[in-house]
Length: 333
Ligand code: HPA
Ligand code: ZN
Image 1: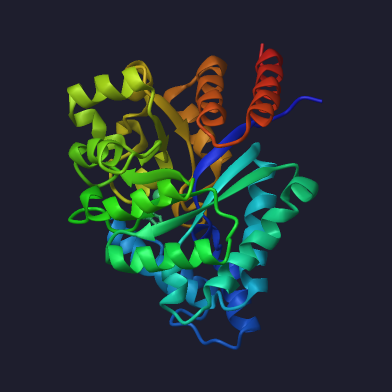
Image 2: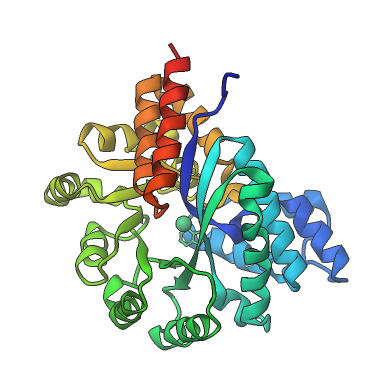
C-alpha cells in the first residue's frame, strides 16, 4: 500500500487549538451555552488575526465550551482522528491547565478528559502520544507553580511542561523556578521562544530554563551567532509555517525562513500549532510548503525524520517510525 502522507511526529500542538468551529457550536449546544457568535458564519468571521494576541483572545474565549470530561475527550479524539489521517504517527500534545482552572473547570476534568482519549490512541488510531502541560507566560510564576504542584499531586500523566501565550514582555527569566521544579520532578522541558519575541528569548530558554526543544524559534534567524549555536547543538525547533503566516510573524509563506533554517543545518520540523485556527493540520502545512517551495521527497523526509528523532518517544518507537519513514521514502521514487 502506498502511503500518501509522510509519516511524521507532531511536536507542537495545542489541543485547545484543534477545536473546530463546528465542534465549538456542538459543545455549546450540548452544554446549554449561548455564545457571543452563535452561528457558524458569525463564528467563522472572527478568524482573521493581526498578531498573536488577536488570536489568543478568540482561542481563550472559545474554550468556554469545554466543561466536562466528555468535552475534552471528544475534542482530543477529533484531533487524533484528523491528525492520524494526515500521516501523524506520534503526537506530543500541549494543553493549557491554567486557562481551564481560571474558568472554574477542575484540573482533573481537563486532565482526565484528555488522558482518556490519549489512553486508547494507539488502539483507535495507531498513534502514540505524550501529554505536556503548557503554562501561560502572561500569568505569574506563582500561578504556574501552584498548577504544576497540583498536577504532580494528582499524578497527572504528563511527560513535560511548556510555556505559551503572550511572549513579548514575558521572558524565560520569569519562569526559572518553574522549570527547576519540573526538572526535579523528571519532566521534559520545552518552551515557546522566538515566535514574536527576540532571539535572546531563545538563548534564555536554553540557558535559564534548560529547554530541550524550542517551539517556533523562527526569530533565531536574526542572530547569526545563535544560528551557529542551534546548528552545532542540533536544538530541535518545532516550526509552524501556516501559524506564522496567519499570526503575521511573516508576511506570506514565500517569506517564511524554513528553507533558510534547513540550509543553515538547523534541526527543524513541521507542525500545525492550532490547526483549527491557522488553516490546517501537518499534512496541509506540508502541502502548502511543497506548493510554495517545491520541496523534494528528501527534504520532506528530512523534516519528518527530525520530528521523529526530536520527539520524547522511546527508542523502540522512534526506530519503528524511522523505519516507516524509510519505507515511505523508497515509495516516492
Ligand atoms: N503561541 C503562543 N501561545 C499559544 C499559541 C501560539 O501559537 N497557541 C496557543 N497558545
Ligand atoms: Zn504554539
